[in-house]
Each structure stands twice: as structure tokens, then as C-alpha cells.
Amino acid sequence: MDSMQNISSSFNSLTIKDTSSKNDIKPISLVPILLSPKNDIKNIPLDSVISPTKSIINNISLDPILLSSKSDDKVSKNIYLPQSPLNNIIKKSSLTSNNYTKTLYFSGDIIDSDKLFEESIVKKQFTRFLNENSAVKINKDLHITLLYTGGKYNLNAHLFDDLINTNFTIIVDSFAVSDTFFTFKVLSLQHNIPYFGNKFMHLTYIYTKNSKPVDSPSAFQKGSIFTFDKPIILNAIISIFSK
Image (cartoon, rainbow, N blue to C red; front, side, top):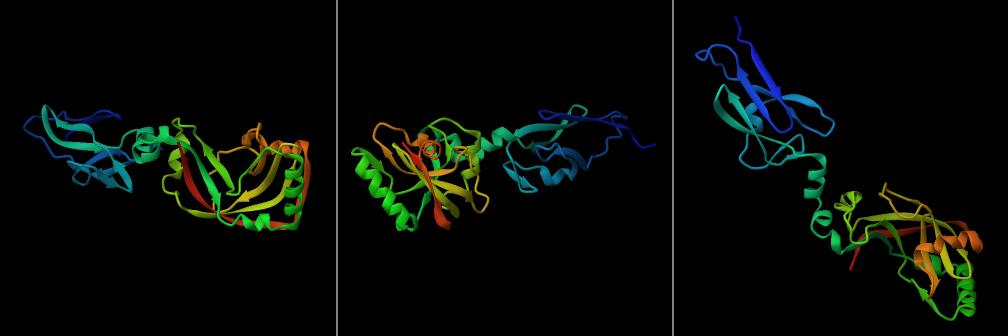
């Protein structure tokens, strides 16, 4: 009669016991192992998951959370299982785990801003704004803030780990001018770039000295709105702004 085996497993421990006679111990070739945060359980050959260092199973990095496989009181081999999803994210992200205190925000820097500045309607409103405001700050290097962290840890920051220096495009369809701001409206981001910025996607062009760039979308509520004859496609690159 085949021996009956009781197998109990958890995320932090795994014990395999043989309840048959001590003289009738049979090797167990398959063990249940947690492969992903979705709690998918699959049987994998024991030898394929045993390693003294990190290993990869189905493209998942297995950090050394040590489990023991036992047959009665005899420890057979060590098994390495993945850590929790949060720990994996922190370890994977050098930006969020080691350097996040130096990072202020992730941005999409516009490469060809001149496409906007050369529009005749933009030139006209630019001149008028400067004539009406003596103390202003001009952002000739336009950017869209994708994620603001302010030097604090942010779980979404890891999404940009492999995207730094990645090129993408944005579409601008209009701009607004108020007493304090000159702001372009971003209609959309292309190439599925993650975005956690202002709910009103925008590019701050000019603002008065006593105002804050983060408030520049208010130009669309308090100022005059101008729409381009056709949307303008701009090229951008993802970068990090640090202290």
C-alpha cells in the first residue's frame, strides 16, 4: 500500500513529513511552490528550485527566504521562495530604495518646444503677457510632471525604473493665458507612459514671480483659452529631477 504523506506549507515555512514506517521513506520529487503575488500554485521538480543563490523561475527573481524540507527529523535540502511583492519592488528599484530622498519628480522633458513657440498665436500672446507683467519666470525647457515624489518614497516610482531616457510623444491642442499664467493643455500621452501628475495634464510656460507653477492649470478657469488649428505632436524624453 502506498505510504500516506502529510504536506503542510505556508509562505514562511514548508515541512514535508512521511507518516509511514521510518524504514520506508520515499523521496518526494514534486513540491508546491508559490510563484506569484496572485497565489498561483504549481508543482515544480524539487531539483529545479534548489539553489544556493538567487534563481529565476518563470522570470521571477527568487530571493533567499530559506525554507526547509524535512522527512521526519532529517533535513534534506533548502528551498528558496520569492519574497513578498512589496519587498521585490523595493529591491528591484534602485531609485525608490536607495536614492528616493534625492528625487523630486519624474518628468517628460519636451525636446522640440519650438513647435509651440513658433505658432503665431503663441508669439502674440507671449508678447502681450510680458508687456502686462514685469516680473515673470519663463520655462523655455518645457516639461510635464509624470510623478512628483518630493524626496519621499513612492510606490509608483518603480514603474519608471526601466523608462528613464525613454522617448515618447505628447499631443497639445490648446493653451490659456491669465493674469498670472501662460499654460499649454496636454491632450494625451502616447506609448502608455505612466502618469501620476496633476489631473489636468499641462505644460507651464510662463508664470508671475509670486505664483506657483503647480497652479498654472487655473489659467483655463480664469484666463482666455486659445485652440490650435490642429493638435501639435511633441517629442519628449523621461528624466529624473533631483535635489
